[in-house]
Amino acid sequence: MKKVITYGTFDLLHYGHINLLKRAKSLGDYLIVGLSTDEFNKTKAKRSYFSYEERKVLLESIIYVDEVIPEKTWEQKKEDIVLKNVDTFVMGNDWEGKFDSLSNFCKVVYLPRTKGISTTKVKKDLYKLKAASH
Image (cartoon, rainbow, N blue to C red):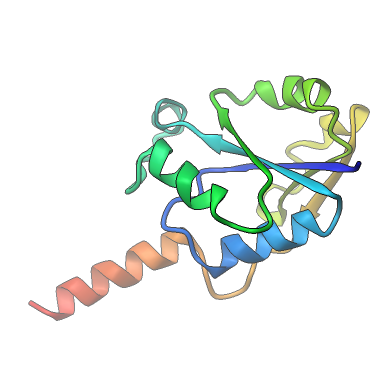
């Protein structure tokens, strides 16, 4: 069985996330998602609308996702790859080159982002809608 792993916050789940997960799953048989914990997000100066547990439930309901594990640090990726016997590490191409060192342990693939959508864009658009309604 070929295992694939990817990581992210996956807040305000949208079709760009689904596209990434679908393409990641197509690279193997079993997709593991390392989901950033609320505590880890704080170290990245990120705040999620949904809690870790809520985001985990959302991800687990997606047909492409086989397993969700907590991402607590940047450094754990290597350990997860070895521990879970991962064949392919996948990230969006906005991270291109940042994880090349993991190629010593598995194949590293950077997938193109879905054009026209991001969590940042969704948040900005919602803010504009709210402002326009007042």
